[in-house]
Amino acid sequence: MSDRIGVLSAGMVSAGGKTLAETWDFVNGDIGSLVTLPYHLGTTQRRAKVANLMALEYTGIKKIGERLFDIAVMAADQAVGVGNLDGICIGSTTDSYAAQEHGLPLENPLVVFLADRYRIPFHRFQFSNACASSSTAIAAGMDLIRSGRANTVLVGGADEVLASCIAAFDAVRIYGDECRPFDINRKGLTLGEGAAFFVLAKEGIGEPIAYLNGAGLTCDAKDEAAMDPYAIADAMVLAFIEAGDEKRDLGFICAHGTGTKANDEAEAWAIRLVYHHNVTPPVVSYKGALGHPQGASGAFGLALTIESLRRQTIFANFGILQDDPALHLFVPGTPVEAKMKSAMVLSHGTWGVDTALHVSLP
Amino acid sequence: MSGWAYLTDVEQVERREVPYRKMAMLACKRALEAENFKIPVIPIAGIVFVSRSGEKYPSEIWRKQAAIVRPTQFGSAILNSAAGYAAIELGLRGPQIVVVHGDAAAIAVQQIQQKRSQIMLICVDSLDDPVKPYMFAFVMRDRGSIGVG
Image 1 (cartoon, each protein chain N blue to C red):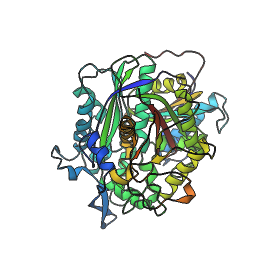
Image 2 (cartoon, each protein chain N blue to C red):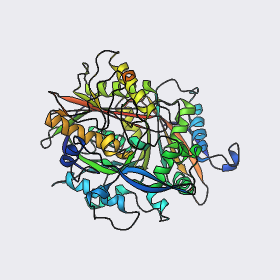
Image 3 (cartoon, chains in turn brown, green):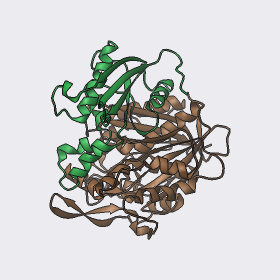
Image 4 (cartoon, each protein chain N blue to C red):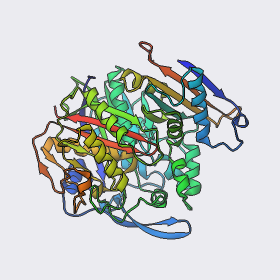
């Protein structure tokens, strides 16, 4: 069992709200956040539904290519308080794509911008592990504190919707008109954007709002895109072991839940494997409401999971209309009050990356 | 640190137009073979990949493909394609981490310290080196405490 790491604060901005509390209320509401944006696939202009920040009357945009930085700052400013930070670990997949898409030079990565802003001189890390970027960054932040090299670390992730991203997912035929995680008629994902950041601290520092107890990082080493439930299960088990949680008594699991046939099926199978095909905890995904924020997925999941634990209410799996009996999961479509102590956040990326974060209340 | 491989010339690799990610895989493979590991690697091994050119090569694919996206190029345009390809070819089931900014070796050490992996490969892409572009990989394994400064 490794040392648990305190989460002192959290900040979030998404298509559902400018703060974590707003986003949590939005996820549990009645309307989604999808707007329709044009993009090009080849020479054809198409339109796709995305969950982007335009609905928030977001006016902080500077020039094209720096939008991601503004999104990240909006969330990070909420998390960063008074006091020094010893390190920063963030994840993002669109950091350089935005610059490339608009023909801009590749400047310093996002981490340098944020580290300069918050005066973090050392231990600056940025990761790009596809959709598991931010959860990899969060795990790295935990490790940094456990190794004794830092006492407080800013961790999280940010990503923005780009036309090229929509086109890419559409080209591999997993982009849908709406996202319905774990629904029997799910047809694909929709993209979203935003950022979520946390200040992690060594146990004994400050008053944590939650604890990160364990992280599991695995790779299925099998396929570029297809997911392997055994590797996902391995990541979950590793997180349980690191957390010293033998009973695996979770309040719920915040799944990656992209709304594609393959992802949801693989995750469901993995969860059943971990629980030996017995009763599993409720499983939810926020992506029906907020879209798939790509590299910020893990950070989004952690933020909403912490908020759910604090409120003792499992957030709703927005978008599910009809259960898929083949998945054998309990996926609540409305918020569920429950007494719970801990939860797990799953996040997976292309090229076989699987992550799991074990989080609990103080 | 033990076992390393140093590919200095693109033409030394099997084909002149070997893709970027295959160079990473070959460098990792030679590092593992230098350490007498058989492929696929039986102990749990992970990989930390870092590029001194930042995100240039996959991003170039992304930029070129932004207008015409081919499904077969999707994977190559993702920034962890090199690490992922090496993981598949070499059977690396441990942590797969791509560092855009920061010390890759420190990240690798932390995976071993947290017992997530017995062996970590560190692969460094320096194809942008103006004098001698190269891809470098070495194996790190747990042999007691490893200091990181």
